Length: 149
Image (cartoon, rainbow, N blue to C red; front, side):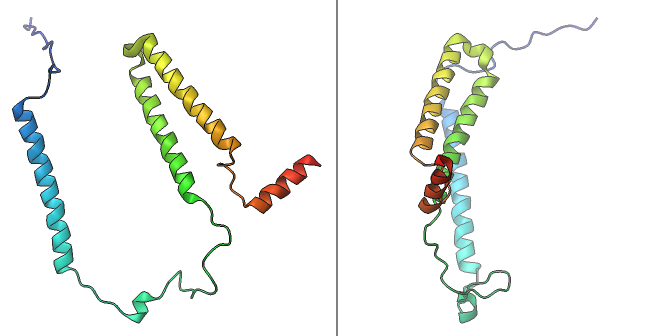
């Protein structure tokens, strides 16, 4: 029969990190920052920089541009990106809660429920304010006119 050994009971240290841990973290940050700076400096020194008329021209699939590139009513892509980030962060919090739901108990359940309700109310507000409308004002008015017929 093989002798049995007890697994260690205290795998996670308690209390603030020690000086050795902080020194290791500081050294890591210093090395990472130094490496980034070294690569940026090398790219600046060793990279070739040439300007010409040909380089300054726009190029899109071998088709020369014609007309103005500006739209009459710009699409608010930045708002869509912000909404995406907000709901991505929401998903991260919900998934992390789902992983540890058994450890968090009822208090964790009520906290994540409150979080979801607040985000849902924000989505409803966003919807009512027209933040999710993709078309221009004219197309929205036409769509509302069609619905009212």
